[in-house]
Length: 198
Ligand code: ITT
Ligand code: NA
Image (cartoon, rainbow, N blue to C red; front, side, top):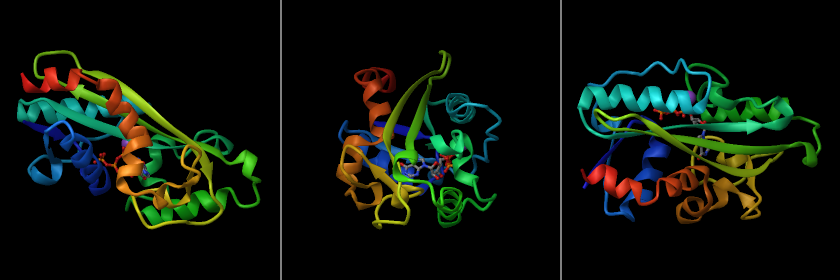
């Protein structure tokens, strides 16, 4: 059983490999298909961008494809970085620069006003059928400095309420038990087996 996840993000790819191995799926990502070019994310929501990525790749491969569009939503920043999370500090998609930008924008803001969440939209594109989406969130707060070395993206500055630790302080198993990505995937539930085995 093989599943294609339309991502070039190595952090996401690693998480999907673990999450899907539980279902007996082998994960392929766009890192395995260098011939597939960049898909322009012109949508205005996570869902729209996930659909754009999943459908573009599914058409090219004529194969079922899952895409993930995700990001960090900070209440005190009116929802930013949001859908612009990957390139918040510029086109080079630097996790370090992105975290510095969020930390700077929240300088002096007290804990109770640092509420934030990770959001993940997954789109499932199946050749000849309509694409659908599910989503998951993970609630927490933006720390005032980095903590931990695990994960990717904004994980070092995100305090997870459910675990009372920074996301980057969690093992991959712990993150996969509470993350926005895992929760979205849970919503696919049994569907995933049926849809993707056909
Ligand atoms: P693909 O489009 O190729 O999948 P991308 O990194 O450009 O890769 P997105 O447009 O969905 O993907 O941006 C997601 C960004 O949101 C990601 O680069 C991180 O900065 C952040 N992000 C998403 N999930 C995260 C997580 O689990 N932990 C930390 N940061 C996360
Ligand atoms: Na995006």
